[in-house]
Length: 66
Image 1 (cartoon, rainbow, N blue to C red):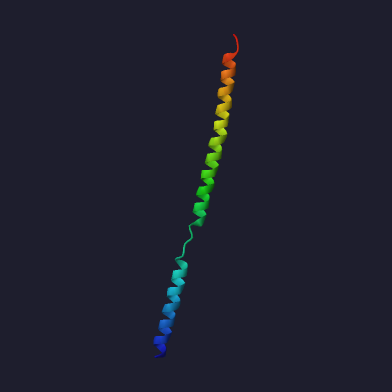
Image 2: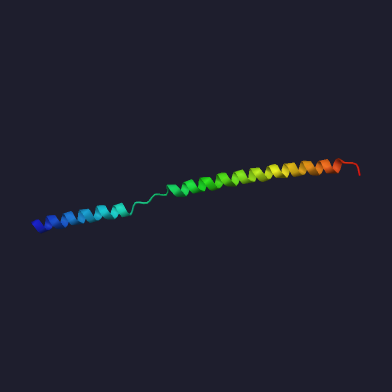
């Protein structure tokens, strides 16, 4: 009877330990993706502003008399 109780207890401890090892967290991946998207949007916004300024400069230069 004592052997069966010990075996049952050992199996329960083994199962609880195994399920603890199988737990995974995916949160850092989502945070990284959000940061990458935010940085990409900021970079696109920055280059759009440069493109607009460049277009305005070209228009000003074209309007000058030659």
